[in-house]
Amino acid sequence: MQKKFFISILLFFLPVIMGYTLVEWLTRGIPSTYAINQKVLETKPNSLETIVLGSSQLMNAVNAEWISVPTINLASGNQHHDTDFKLLQGVSPQLKQLKTVVLEVSYSHFELPHNGPEFWKNAVYLEYYNVNCYERFTYFKDRLLYLSNPSVFSRELVDHYVNGKYAPQFNEAAFNAADMYGQFERENYDLKTINAMKTFKINTTENSQIFKTNASLYFKLLKYIEKQGWNVVICTTPTYTTYLHAQNPNILKRRDSILEVTKIKYPNARFLLKESDTLNYQIKDFWNQSHLSPSGAKKFSQSLDSLLHTMR
Image (tube, helix red, strand yellow):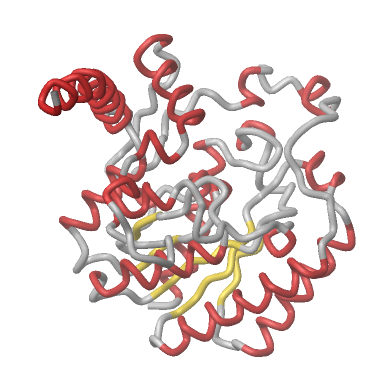
């Protein structure tokens, strides 16, 4: 009787396990910056001199292939300073030649909640970078990508395998230099249409408590970088004029106050502040209101490259 029951249970769960295994395998087959960065970390750790950390704004702004100083860009969407800190601590022991850490301090970086130990991308970081951001002992399921965010990966699976929409062309530096899915490009860079857009992603909600928490961790991160003897570059990436006009002046003022304190406490820190650069960046340099297109990334990467050379 027990044997029959066990066989029934096995027959019930076997298709489920096989089905999930297939979905997980297909998920890992979707091209990603993480898989390419994993290869870079495995094959070139002793040559990397610069590490870039931040959110999708810096991910889209820096093409390490256009930087002559050996660089890896570990920035990714919705990634905040707490995760940056964990990634830096996790991968830096491999980077024997590391000299410079590039950090992002965007307009609302200090008034958005940190990712925390339950951030869904922790599975990605654990699987590809072998960095534990969970702040606890990890289990087998913590490496399962699809399970970490089924809604996100379901859309990507459909786009990649069914609709054929998700077709990035990542270079060896994990940058998608052929990204043709930008909102501005879809509008054919029509100024009238783009300037009339009223809805786009921007945080205008003030939160003084989150600001205090985030600022405290930011300065701990800077102290850690200084203690390791590394240089630090603080960046803001260009944003389109409508984004600049939509900013909450109080949030902006508090962010700028942090930059001023940084200059005083860390006089050796270098800055690449391009957030309001509307002279050198035109409409075709933007993917949307707050992200650069590949042409904008080329300009920003060249600026970063020039700055890094002055620090060698």
